[in-house]
Image (cartoon, rainbow, N blue to C red; front, side, top):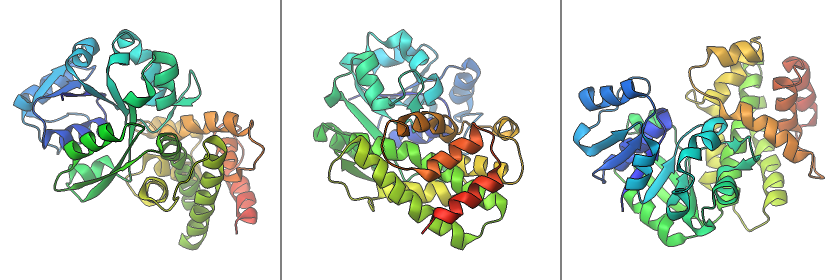
Length: 327
């Protein structure tokens, strides 16, 4: 089986590093020709995780997405969700014949769906050829080869097992799951909760409050997943609770960073402009707000983040209201 990665950011670079441990060659789409030239000459991505060293002979790089997709049996998507639909237009005729795993932790704006659903409805990829790659796993720790964990979810357990074997190495442990919808929504919504924790931190709330905020977040997430896709799932599994914890507490978390800046007094616009990487939670918050309007349940933490990000309400006042409802 040949593997192809679409995307050039930190997570795409980390995934390329993992796959290069066992796979040769690795096909990799990067839209910037300068990045491709640097990887070919220096063996590193000049914009992300520059300390990761590649053997250029292992990499088949191209800025032509069709070329990469044609050469790959299994595609791994690592393009930010706001740009995913448009980016895939040029290969939409090729996608139904591929196994496609999403490593995107976001919601596609065009359909308001998580990526797996969008791939099926918008591009005709069969459900049993779709999978997701979830954490808890930060790209920066993969770069440092710190022991990390991935969850691979798919309806096709043979495919999930096969990819899990190819991604297991000295610093990566893998587990598989059949809860593709739950895992993907959890991997998306935890970014919103991480923004909430960051806002609290920026406002000066301490560890005691943040721990209660996190415990309420996992209960809120459980309610949401039950409404979206009711199935038997253990919310203490690393794909749910573990991913939420690392995103909420890690200094590497761009979503927590965005929240912290807002809590410290940055406007949303200025905070987004300061960041060098995309905060998926910012975009997910808007779509999650629309989804929760259709559900007869209360999701006060997600709603609070939406009010701060999009309604421009006072972070201090909104977080104080959230505090009153925590238990």
